[in-house]
Length: 227
Image (cartoon, rainbow, N blue to C red; front, top):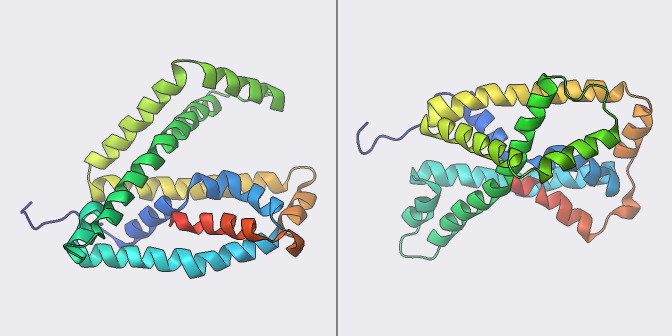
């Protein structure tokens, strides 16, 4: 590879899946239903979709344009586009923000690996909700198990990164994103077959504009800002 060569995605699908993977955060999965039900149901969803169109999508497009035009990493892109200005600090703060996000995402991802192992070994079979709570408390209070899974996740992440853009990030995105979609579909199907599912769907989707206030808009804006 020459000095001017840069690693690139091998396909448009890889770009789309990697972008979706970076945009879909924990808040979009485990917190969104609670936020929706607590902030007016369908009223919150409408505000959320509006924030995506007015905030999230333009920001994402701007990031793509900055990257394509500068052909540089996050830290150097602004410095290259606006040399001699303070815009370079925006890129550096972006790198710092990514590091801070990783600091807690890695912990939760370690928990996820533990739960994957438990599910694969039938460790959840027959447990009540109270037993689940006790099991998590025992796991999180253990001085070694969370740390071991944290290290395991960081090693997996390191392995993907060192493989490069096409063979690492793109290839893993083509595996993990469809897997995530399949898991979500399975969870949705299982959820709607549970007793009281109709009431839950009504609670989630019934608009209640009386609950709409400034906090609702702040919460809705927080989701697409992850793009």
